[in-house]
Image (tube, rainbow, N blue to C red; front, side, top):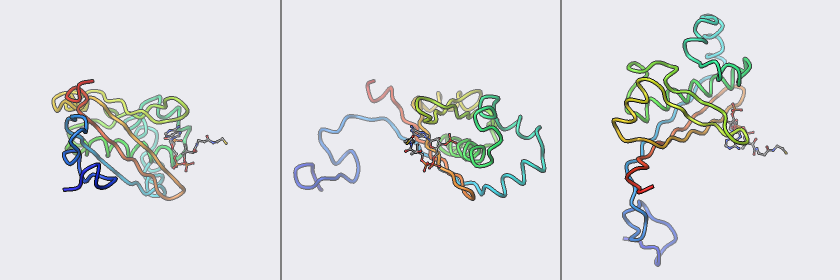
Length: 149
Ligand SMILES: CC(C)(COP(=O)(O)OP(=O)(O)OC[C@H]1O[C@@H](n2cnc3c(N)ncnc32)[C@H](O)[C@@H]1OP(=O)(O)O)[C@@H](O)C(=O)NCCC(=O)NCCS
């Protein structure tokens, strides 16, 4: 088993004797085809946008299909991190807000918030990336309470 003194990396925290105790980590990732997403939004119209996105998300994205698609991916990725499909959740239960220096912040509402609390997943992070054709979101949730913070 590698240790800190023998090599510079650890396959998992348990391999490092002085690694801080951590709770469970849950992850979710999703990729969205931007042109396909844009066609869907155009087809379904503003009612779909209002059902899927919060007013703050719509305001932030200002109609950019790439940015909206990235937030759509974040909703799917958040649902995956919860171990749920979008089915039991409402789209707007997983919201991306914009934090300091443009960094995205994941905020849970409704059923997503209830499910996260039930699982003890109380720290959420999201990263977004998009170009003309693809939008990606990666979500990480951790049990911060068990980490003693
Ligand atoms: C933030 C940065 C890494 C984004 O990378 P990119 O390749 O241009 O674009 P990507 O599609 O991969 O990522 C875009 C997403 O990054 C996220 N992002 C933006 N700022 C961020 C930050 N400070 N921290 C974490 N994520 C950030 C946003 O979610 C953004 O999506 P959004 O615009 O829809 O909200 C890049 O723009 C950067 O390094 N910025 C800092 C330096 C800077 O601002 N330079 C400009 C002045 S010289």
